[in-house]
Length: 470
Image (cartoon, rainbow, N blue to C red; front, top):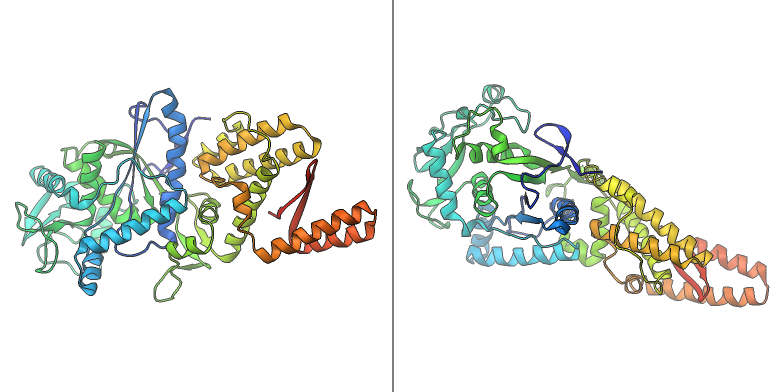
């Protein structure tokens, strides 16, 4: 089936039709590099990596180009605070944590974006867009600040479903005296003495958070882009403000479909909790991705992040990780057993594509992987190498879109606990001897022990192999 995605703005699943099939554009909000990313920060890049892989498979074979941009926020209050605490330039902080982020993404098999725009490299574009918004009558300067006038954009609140009049009437925030109304937001602000600063028509300062993405999208991809993605926490105010800025900078504030002048589709992944609680430093349950990928294969983390539909909440817990490891062991086990048989073909089966093209239904796509691994197991048992080769080719092609099964199967299992490995291989040798002697009672005892160890044995023409049960 053709790709359908759920559009946050229109609140429905829509057929994906790029503005120009020869140049498909996607932008996802990336990291603010002041510390290691937590596991919730990893969900968007993994989810949208699957989307990019699918888009490339769909459009690039016919000569199209998919251009994926993921920004890096390298000027921010938290960065300034970190640099001040350490007594180092902000560039030292941002370089350190951007490098760590990219290393962690590589461990998750997340493909590098085509473009990684940095805020500090696009200050001129940001200042230019702010000036365009001011010239359009949608922003005003006050006390060294430039603020967006939300009342100038009638569609404000459309993405988040919030009514502007209700937002203003219900505002419970302390309003700066230079604001015309409580929800006007900063496009430019003066820097403090020890903060990074750039010149502008409104005085030396630095950009507000929201304008950064709007300007970088226009500069690197052009408007409108096809897909804008990010976490559900960014819908308001960040993405709501992005639309307002991007549209008003080009004088489209009062058009009926003004939002289409910025992004054609909006996609947002759901929240991630830890043991059914929101991650919080006060609770002490913030899990750093950098620590997780040191303690286990990155593919286990990636599988866990894709195990629920991307728009649904995902609860992170040890049971999820254990099951993810077992699931991957099952799939790698099938590939390991069929290691000597070359894959036939490089196309996913229809069932897999039907799932993944249905708004990235990764749980359904994973079910297809299990079905293919079962075909491999049956084929190996029956000695049907043609069936094995066909299923193996489909399994590898499907897994490539999900970004899993990227390791050598033998190397994957070399990571099994050495104590377990030694015990299982000893039991298999004893089992072979018992069967040769037709000592069925001993063979049954060994089978029960292997079951207790959560191990499945696969008998083949060249001997027995094993894997941890999935």
